[in-house]
Length: 113
Length: 110
Image 1 (tube, each protein chain N blue to C red):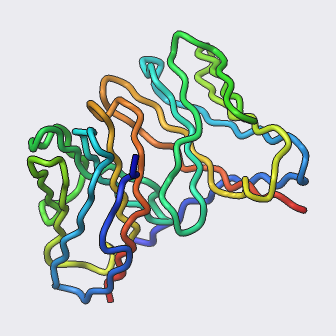
Image 2: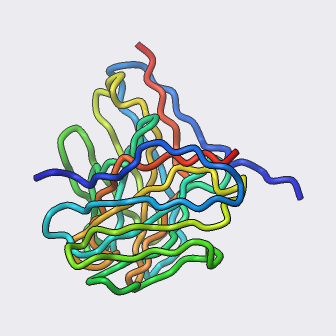
């Protein structure tokens, strides 16, 4: 079974731009969670989607948004990028809710200049 | 204000020795725990999990111990190898809320 895939793997943007990241979960998994990982803050939860609905949301500003499609693939969008948004963005999928074992993708490394 | 980066605890072991990585969790209501391994430039990789109705679980070369009395979780790696060098972090789940620890950096010396 293929693992969680994320595209693109690397991205360089400038302040004020917006970015869309994509995540394909493990086949059969319906829950997708997004995390931001930085050296300064560690792994921080952004949001979780289950059956195309946002189930949980972390403590991030409204510039961070996401969605999930009927095939469970998910995208997250960050608008009006700031330097502090530079991070590794990780997607994790699980079979049910976020409480199940989450399997992570390789991440998208976003650099904001 | 000035931001302070996370200072990861580090553990350095000799190849072939056993490693023990510790994690203190915060919520006595947490009922599910996972250990992840994250190598440089990669996403976290699931290693082993344990439910709160158990106090020990073994995998291949790894053992997780759970002490609910003191809210402590540990990961034991037997015969540590250079490929085990990574950041290890624990995750706890309480009522569908998964929280991750900061991690411990394990370095294996040949």
